[in-house]
Length: 146
Image 1 (cartoon, rainbow, N blue to C red):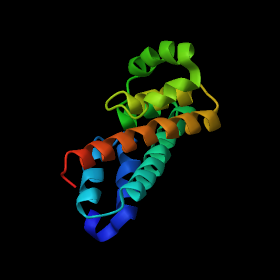
Image 2: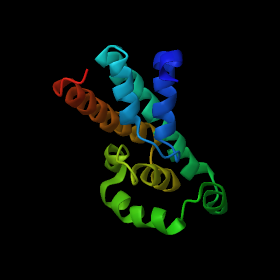
Image 3: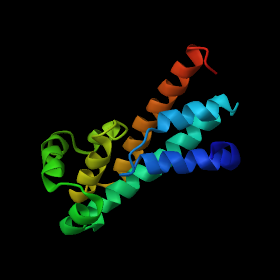
């Protein structure tokens, strides 16, 4: 897929990986590096795609009813409620951690449910995801794989 869609495919994959679709964007980043794309183009595209996906999760929390989240997306209310304590403590700064596997998507949903400022949330989420992809691409470069 990545060979045919190029950086647009990278964008889509990173967007989807930041939603409730379970897969790792790091593997897609590694694939893009293997195809010879510029490291900084990969970092930029992956960061924007993953941030857009994170904000989709954020707005799912903002707009959806609990019944919808539980029925259609299999997101348990208890899981979101557990994040509430951390979000109340750290506020929008918790968005720095939305890149984490397993907890990032529910964290973004919880932040939307709590109606945090979407602009600050997006900005801080972007910074966290940018640092993630800089580190990921740097580690891949240092290993000599690409």
